[in-house]
Amino acid sequence: MDGTADAELARLRARLDGIDEQFLDVLRDRISVCVEIAHVKRRHDVPMMQPHRIGVVQQRAARFAAASGVDADFLRRLYDLVIAETCRVEDEVIGAAEGKASCEHS
Image (cartoon, rainbow, N blue to C red; front, side, top):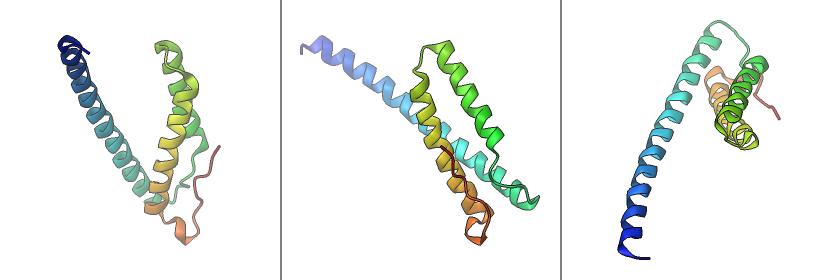
């Protein structure tokens, strides 16, 4: 590679690193809000598992994929991972070990 390509790649990779940092910050914020939601559910004896809400999130991701040209299967798999982690966190807050429902979905 020549110096021009190296410089251009370095600039683009720096942008990508910044985007990754923002992405991780937003993911942390999303999990934090889910912790707040879990506290509300625990206080008001609301079941942790809310299948309708998972469907709403997945449908929104599918609409985004269609509108933006992002692969829908990729976003579905990504949200499956995000939802599984937030369900795990909610289970911890609500007290799944005490016999409350856990968040298992496919």
